[in-house]
Picture 1 (cartoon, rainbow, N blue to C red):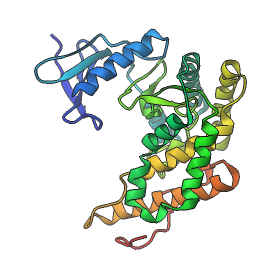
Picture 2: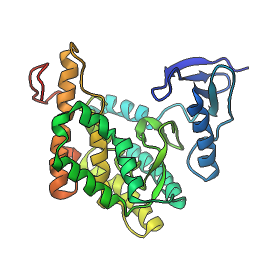
Picture 3: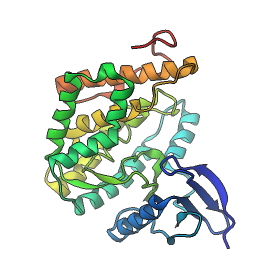
Length: 311
C-alpha cells in the first residue's frame, strides 16, 4: 500500500488535499465529489491526446473522493525558472522559454483538435468565471463603471469569434512540466488560446515576487511559436486576441485581494498595486485592444497610498 505524505491543501476543494507516495511515485488528490469529477475529466483529456497524465485510480470511499496519478516529473517549469533566476540575477534563459513553448504548443494543438460548441453567452460565462468579475466589482465598486463593462463586452464580442475548447483556466509555469500539464481542478470551456498565450505575462502581475522576469524578445519568441501552431490548426494566429485574454487575467489577479479591516500594510500595498495594474491595463485595452505587461512596475517600485486608504 502507498505511504501517503501530505503535500498541500487544495483551494478549490473544501477539506481537500494533495498527497505524495515516494515509494510509488504517485500523487493523490482528495476532497469532495468535484475531485472524482476532475479525475474523470483528466481521463477524458488523456484519451483525447492532451499532454495530461492518465489517472491510475478514480473513486470514492466513505470519507472522501479521490484520484491518483503518476508523478509528472521532479521539477515544474516554475521550479526550473526559479533556479535559473537565482543563478542569473532574475534572468531566465532561452531553453526555459523553448520548453514552455513546446508544452504550450502541445496543449494548444490538442485543444484545437477537440473544439466545443460555442456561443456568445458561453464566452461571457467563461469571462465572468475566469476573472471572478462579480467578486472584483463587489470588492472594488468604484471600478464597476460603464467604461470597464464596455471593455468586457468588447473582449467577449471579439472572443466569440474564437472556438471554445477544454480549458485549464489556471495554466502557468507551476502547472506545466516538460511533458505534462497538471492540476485541472478549475477546468471549464474557454476560448482557444486563453490558457497558453498569457503564460509568460502572468509573472508580471506578481510584481517581481516570482523571482524571474521575461524579456520582450522572449515573449515574442514564445508567442511566435504558438502562432505557428494556431495557423496550422485554425488558419490564422491567435496573438491578436492576447489583449482580450489578458483583460480577463487583470480581473483574476485583482479578485479576493481587498484586505479586511486591520490587515497589515503589506496587504493594502499589494491590493493597491493590483488595482493600479488593473486600471492601467483597462485604459490601454480600451485604446488599443492590447495590454503590454512589459512596462508593469515591480511591487517594490510601486508608489502606493498610505496603508488603510480607501479608493
